[in-house]
Image 1 (tube, rainbow, N blue to C red):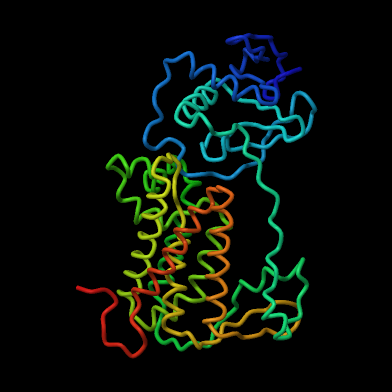
Image 2 (cartoon, one colour; image 1 turned 120 degrees about the vertical axis):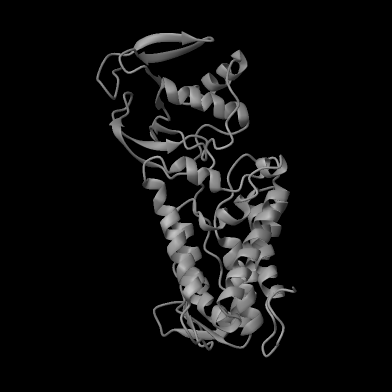
Length: 367
């Protein structure tokens, strides 16, 4: 086999009993399936590695296309985030499972492995979950849908008839700021700063990184989570902001996000991975919307027919019930996603409790 970068022939090498294929010109190694994790474990066992610094690999990045072809099967490789969250991008062949990495990345992987010995080397995305079934109550209401294709649209609102006045300045500012924070990751040397702004439970437990409770609310690990969070904020945020005024809305958004993050950090206090995202804060906005406008209509388009409107208490209540069921189900399986769902529900509850009932003269939060 030949080096995918420079074309030089591989030279057989041995490390701690492991047979490797080396490119001496590029100072890089080809690892057959499963070998890079074994090599990292051997390096950890050999000792001499530093501990992972506080900002090491805390903001997940998405897989990218690789410029190289697999030296074993000649198929295009992809740049995969080693371990799912290390931010160490290695060239990975999805066909044979091999990994191509230079010496600097192999050492970083060993440092990451020292801090996270149980993390799998190659994290493969789980298959898409089965579409959520339409509640029987909606089917009886006459909604025309195809469960395998359109059921997800029931959770995607396209509008509401709740009253609103004025400009949603805070909601708009949050959306713009979150978008800037997401795309800032592509600016050279911005990664270190962004990683320092994430919420890391292990650092919180050690008495550090408290600012992450706030700053992590404006960070997102992927474009999909950014779009979903900001879409729901845009649909519901302007109505809540109109009802409670700009300052109280900002306070509600931040407090709900902090409470969600605090619970998630508490339930996962030993984790060295980042907690980023606005799901808890946006859930707080939904909780506030339900408190303010329980009878308002929420419009959805569940299929090719005309849009339909349902009371907010039905729509948001169904959303809340779905999250609760998912939390219980995932917790029973021991899945870590249950921790995130618990935080999401905490944000929802905080938003509802912190919002005054309509026609109340009380302030949003006690002095």
